[in-house]
Image (cartoon, rainbow, N blue to C red; front, side, top):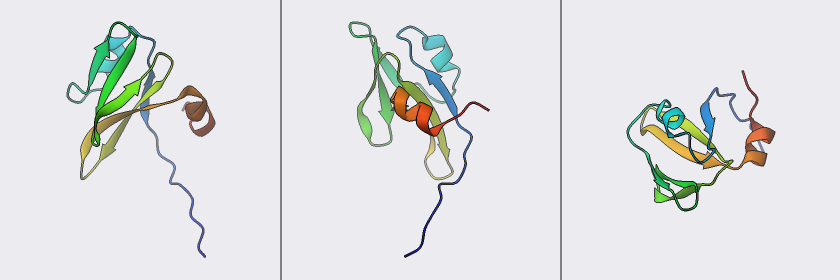
Length: 87
């Protein structure tokens, strides 16, 4: 059995606070989200569909793939802190 290590990658990310749409727009790319003003959540349009929701406090990560272009996805704060560090 072989072992593998995840390649180190530098990412762009913003923590969603329920009202920082301008900061979120600064990630670039097309309009990849829709805000739900009743719940302070935001629906992220991902490559897999529109079912991904970022709640207040979640991190929104920008990814770039040579085959799929720019895409975004939400990550829970505890997972983000465990797996990413500021550079």
